[in-house]
Amino acid sequence: MLKRLRQIEKSQYPIIGILLIAIITRMAFLATYGPMYSLNSDDVAYVEAGIRFAHTGAVTMHDVISAQIMPGMLYLIAPFVWLLGEGELLWWGLKIFWNILGVLSIYGTYRCVKELSNGYCGAIGAALFLTIDFTWMDNLILTETPFMFCMIWIIYFTLRIARQPKYRYFWGIVATYMGALLMRPNVAPYPLFLFLYLLVKHYDIQLLWRQILIAACVVLAFIVPWTIRNYIQFDRFIPLTYGMGNPLLLGTYQGVGYPLDEELDYSHLIEKMPEESLAYYDQETQTWDLSSYMGKFYSLEYDELMAKYRMSVWWEDDPASMLHSYLLSKPKIMLLGSFCWDTPFGISAEANMPIRYLDLGLALIGSAILLFDRKRRPETLMIGTFYAFQIAVYSYSFALNRYGQTLYFMRFILVGWGIYRVYELLKERKNRLAN
Image (cartoon, rainbow, N blue to C red; front, side, top):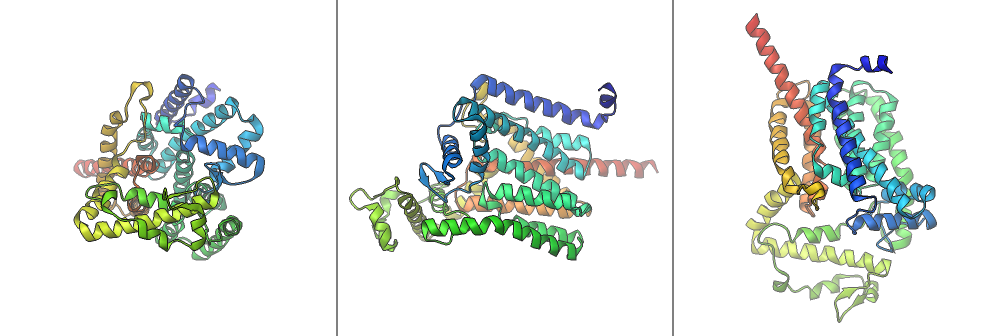
């Protein structure tokens, strides 16, 4: 044991310390607030849906059959139900597992940074996770923690396969991509970014096409049965989810200058709905029957009609405020929010904001420096453009600090690389002066 400890490089000491702090803070939170701590919202709904899935195999959300969510959360929760039952022990198991994923996400970010720098800079990127909002997030049974875990390790395996085209990294990409896709469909376009990155890195084109074919078969092995299931249930072609209408509608109430409900007439929108949907609509109260899965389905379709109507009116009446909202106000929520809706250990979300401003500033400066570095330019562009794409997607629909929190790791990676590049430049300058 002592011999192994002596073999640990000094550059590994910082990450070991960071991981220990992360473990201690997460376990302290769990011990203080208990396994039943929750938002009494989506987190409880996910657990209830996971229990139902474990017993019936039905994919539900809020007590009705659904394709509003991808089934990844239910796949994760069901094995714990089989092993631990449905009581407090289930919550203990889930919370511990979620915390493990959170700690492994920190380690994954360290590995991503270290891939193009050193262990010290990797530890700097990892240290940015040591804020209370990440600890709080990892103690909630939501998609955020497993989704972020999968995304971080997708990036790591992507960086590895570009340098060593081994099948273990390829299968790592496939597994983590499927894991992320089963949590949130907004990761679906990632293969396009991966493809372009590998082309720039002069990846073996024949091997690349062969791996694309294999990966496509794996993805279709899930997508085809899922799409058939959705068509049988909802009589619609739904390859991923149908839940876009509600966040799109909520997004029209963000920013400045958006139209007020009392200024609009929504009554004509019901005429655009399919005739069969009216069986689930109460004309007097103008509400949908959400106890029926088809009523829930049609209500989300109606939300999309409302959203597009509100957006069209907004654009006609005040395009300047709409542009300000979608290009500035909503992206700001994604870039500078802190997903911590409580005050664990007396620490508020506002306490995290200096770190958020710092890491964003360092990421922007680091990215600018890295773009002049031929060695790391492809990686910087891949991560930077994918991050910008995700910000744009959420800003178009519904910007929420909860969603932005899971994307910060890409900034942390750029911070680590940027600091190392500055170190290289200073070292080169010192050597030139010495000579």
